[in-house]
Length: 508
Image (tube, one colour):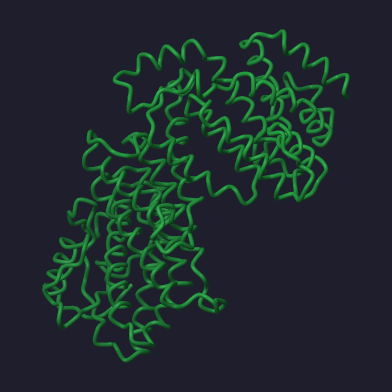
């Protein structure tokens, strides 16, 4: 094996950059063929060019690739940009991107090397056989750690730390968005305790302007997904247990992303801090933020099992999640598109399910104390969201979109369960007078009324027992004239409908 590695190193020293890229592309294709997970219903992958690879086991293949790891690290070190001679020009100091474009044209092979090697390492590190203290994983971390001239003979956590430090050294050498994404994915495969810093690296990448490579230009979907991935990493590796005072807390990161989304929707030409977030990337970013919000909600300590976290701390986190959910739902009214509506229907349902299972028991606990007013406020805020979800559901059904309409029944079931649980909680705490019902007409996203007969004629799969959907309202005798944020117009419409009909019963 040593002789083989020596011969490979000698041969690699004689290769030109474009030849190295060709070999790396071939190796990456073989790694994807052998190591990338295949779905249950996926079609058989063609073995053209991979006949010899298909005859060996995955373990044996990984061992061969790991034997090339020193040579791959040599390529990284040789092509890394030196900070004192080839530093990447800051976009804030550049008046034009011409110089950056010329540099990319002259260094296409060099920039591709990083993306290819990091993609290969990602497939190796995320392979199911690389688990715990397996000999292959220890060998990989030893090779990466020794490049820093560190003593890697220690616990697995120390080896992971050194491996992560070595990989992040090449952050400034990655000149394209694809290479940055490949680097961060590779670092995620290392795992360990040092991954919290990946959020800062992703945030820095979002604040820079990147030139679009020919491959990225041919696939705008790839570019938008890369932007969404960076947003997801910046949120995922923020401090979810922080109280919001730190710049790296989840609440602060969420607010920064929501501020950028609002700028893109309302003022797309306005200068913003997250420069990569554009109107074209909004669907991918919106979906990722919804996913991260659901995951953020899942970190809320359960009322039944949590004995160390105070109810006040859990309520603060719940209030933050509901506020962010309201902001995301509000985006639909200003930038309605099919991808955004689909994300709301899918992840809005999951959010409501989590609120019913984790949020309602906490509100029950808070309601029994002296925090009834705060509980009242958070329910009113979520009620605005549920009303808008009703309008989104009606809009999907009226547009005859079968894929979106299929998501509506489960969402409406969650909304109805929310109504019943709120009524039950208020009755249990002698607050039944705060609960009243008003008829809410079905409207689309523009606020225009949708006739129930039209929806039924369009082939609605649900059986409507009434001509209108009923929605609950929480009343406050001292706040009869007070508007609810993000739902002023809808509340006025609901109030007027209730007075017109004069109905105070709930029907489904």
